[in-house]
Length: 193
Image (cartoon, rainbow, N blue to C red):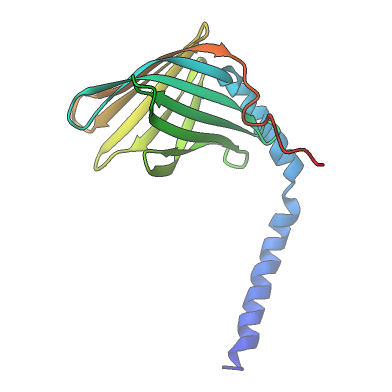
């Protein structure tokens, strides 16, 4: 056992040495600046939004909600944070989700980390000229595709279940009006003293 310890130590040191040049080339300020610049393309999402929404339930019925979204920059503009909250007719929260949109400067790609309905995942996020799109795997040869457009203070998003070889089925739709600005999530930070 003692004879292998130096060999293991040499392997570890060699691995650390190989990683050192890559780590030495990493510039956190440049990376964060690239992230902030990429997030500028998503500023149109910022604010507080509210409007009608519906989602198709497993039994085939439509569940209607008053959907709200609050969206804003965090980490000095390097990411966008989204909270979706849907209210039932009696005022109870019937849906709540959190999304964090980020940009990988090395891959030159956006992604969204989503938390909803007891599930979490990382999904490709694609900004467009007037909105965005993202997809969630939904079983064998199936995807849920969300596409949003934002025009004239209205955010319209639809979700379609797409199964290979079948026509898409609309399972979600919301039409929200921008109702104001928000300092969330960066606002009201705990002060230094």
